[in-house]
Length: 415
Image (cartoon, rainbow, N blue to C red; front, side, top):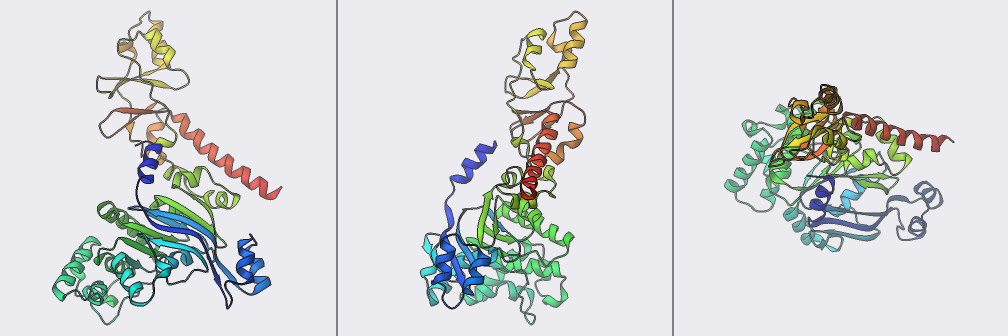
């Protein structure tokens, strides 16, 4: 699917979580002068210096669509966890609306709020928050027990959730008998057991060792591919955000700095602050082929070699397709001139069959070896039809463009 196609697909999905002009001021008089200053655009540090109040969120607006992983990323004090806690009303907002599944959660109180949380949300914490005296299956099924689900039904749901995270054999173990990574899997299973519409994950993998953390990311993406939950994921790690997020929201000092797809965040940083974050990211691991490929413009069957050569233009080669639009041969400028020097105008004599193919969603990292051959790469859809032409030079040009953009931001900072 093309970049624009993916954007349209996402945009057509229902908005499950909406934060609209949300402010959160911490202090004894949150709606007093501190709020007035924050609303007028005064920065977090100055508000605190003048009023003694802390700006947790300042005019934060974003939406999370059905079935997407929306990652909020920022350093300590950025407001990312505060934003999440307005969604289940662990924090009351100073101003603005927080709408979840069509309900303004900030208007809910008491048992009504508790019921809404149980019915719509699962929570996965950074620290596993497991009951040490309860077995794994009882930890996973605890939320269902609170809801009044009978023992047989809740244990069956717990076993299914444990199976999803690869811990089916550990149902009768105690948390102390499990590794840290396994305990976090129990936490994830507990969040999944009640089959919530929404998963709220607050720094869920931050306490894990790097290797285990990556395994948990892989596992979560595999589960998401099956369940298609709506996930609001909080992290301070940009690599994690870019790896997991369908879209990423970067926050600083309680405010939103940029929202976009991982590719947009990496290739189109909105500010020097974002550029500073992305400068150390392996761009090839994030940028996908559809971002840089060009129109395929295949050579029409029956075209003579001289006319075909004119169509190559500024790319290394053009593809010839069969009646179904699938690439079957590649004509390069060098091969065309070689055959013409022999006095032939036979297109078939100049084309080659040994070319590489890839999907529009492949990352540039996956294609370094193929690009090293110096030949155009055929970009094909799921049916094998040609949808794009990837010139190896485009990969290097895109990497260089992003690096130059980041350098420009850095020069602005220091000039």
